[in-house]
Amino acid sequence: MSGKQFIERLEKRFGDLVARVELEAIDPWIEVEPGGVVELCRYLRDAEDLRFNYCNSICVVDYFEPDAKKAAKTAWSPHLEVVYHLSSIQYKTTLVVKVMLPRWKDGVPGQLPEVPSVSGIWSTADWHEREAYDLSGVWFTGHPNLQRILCPEDWVGYPLRKDYEMPLEYHGIRGR
Image (cartoon, rainbow, N blue to C red; front, side, top):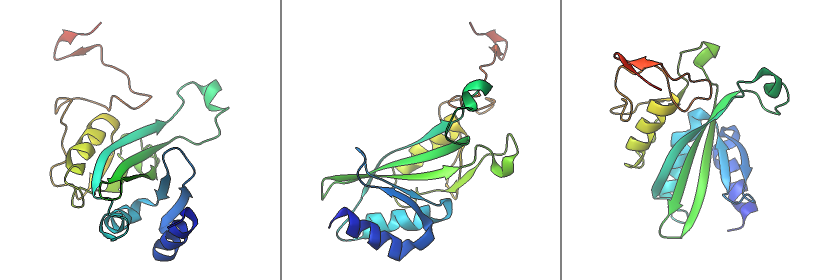
């Protein structure tokens, strides 16, 4: 199937849930609206001629420039990008699915943005989503056990956010 046929197929099936497609990139990708990620991922896994049956990783990219002068020159507004790297072992192909989220839910600092969990589609997503939550502060709704796995439960903040400030001490232990 050609790239054009693949795009037309997705647009016909998912309509406006598919926001953008870039199949000419080094890692071909599809941007999907947050509410459509589960439906799209299930389809990518189950379609006989696609079979994206493995979720290699889920990560979050923080598009935020803390320096006001540099931020004024950026071509994008601050946001988070949840990136799913998928593989079809049967067909030896890969695909990236992206979901754009605001940095904070409803623009309220500290309120985590939400995206539905895909852990019910790929079991490997369970740990990937927990790591993304722990380090980048994205809440995966419907996840069976979303909790910190790298930082202590009482840790404040999300270390991979570009505006994260490392605490000077933790439980009386001073850092550098």
